[in-house]
Image 1 (cartoon, rainbow, N blue to C red):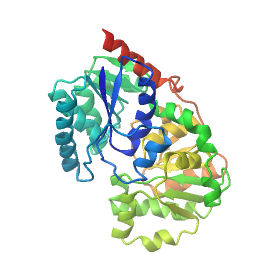
Image 2: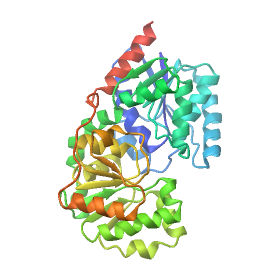
Image 3: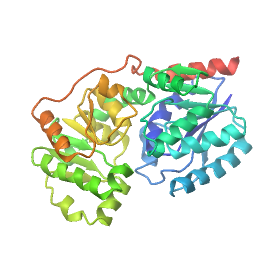
Length: 364
């Protein structure tokens, strides 16, 4: 069975790495790695291939950046040509980026079966491009690999009953595999940090950084928090551009304990996160990772597609409310952060379950 495994943006790489490794153990499976080029600069893409032992892509589509519509269309055009040429028996898409939906749409119209890893998660916020990508991809997929029972229930409520498999979260597989290696990273030494003496932050979501009032609310909170603890912020290109566009350079540079770095590779960033006092983020994946690591996480959003991290784990939604962000940060700094557990199938074996099901399907 020839399986086209699609990656395009940074969150995909951590998910596809363990799947490719596991597929190579099955002589009946022939994975074909397709990189759409949605993220195309070195730190956002290539370094992840090196650190996570991902082989060079078999196919590189080189689509680059663009608006939601332009980028999705470019991926569809390029992937259709590739799919017609290479004739995969199955297309595997992961996550919820533009590459996920674009390649799924092409596959459905070419009558190629689709497997969606991380199916069923929902924020119930249709203003998020990722939510549109998730919902549409699930409707046309043949294998739906879900991380939690919440995801299964979401699919059932939408009337989707076909081939739903509760397998766990593949990002956790990667986290467990590389946690020790990441912990021994020299990133703390490079930045002059001590364990548990700082917070880590990621900020890139359009609703946060493209809307000036929201961005300023968050920066106002950081201004107060950084007086009490160092905050490390690897700066996403989008966020960097908005700081300049909105004239916020002086505000940011005036925060002495806000340490801004370039985007970091997986191991360095994970080395920062596992040793942090807490995390501030608008990322989906970090809500999962911090819950498994039992690190308090404040999510700078009004909703989440990972409710189990709030119900069972260390996550809390704080939105862009300056006072709430500051108050909850101070609770953590003073030793009163939220701790918890995580779902039973977040055990590091999601990948094995996925590939075993695919292999079994290839023989039926």
